[in-house]
Length: 142
Ligand code: 5GP
Ligand code: ZN
Image: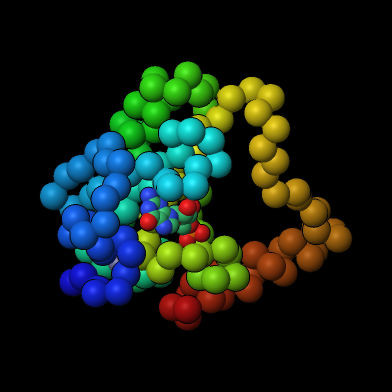
């Protein structure tokens, strides 16, 4: 289940050191080497899965279950008063390491980090057409 050349698999195998903060049989969390803010952590499945699209449902559930306790601990340790959970899936979304991982990014009021801007739909019909396209994709299993 692990990949010889994958950097996060190497971390799981102990071949590359990491600043570990949490571990279960299936999940590992460690500090990001280039944090958005100190305490920024990555929560990963120990098994190699590329991203959201090939993550088994039960494992995704266990990954998600780790988020709240690790996020709460990061808040306690850093004094942050909020946490962003971010997952980049595929290169177009900024994924650089192709072993599934969730970012936990500690936040505080006025820290200046800007999230993505919103661009409203042209009108209600355009929004409904998009919803229809997504519903059709779900119905056809895509
Ligand atoms: P992505 O853009 O794929 O979601 O983010 C990958 C993250 O992994 C980046 O934030 C990067 O700093 C982090 N990272 C890459 N290599 C290593 C490493 O060897 N050790 C640790 N701790 N983090 C890493
Ligand atoms: Zn891997």
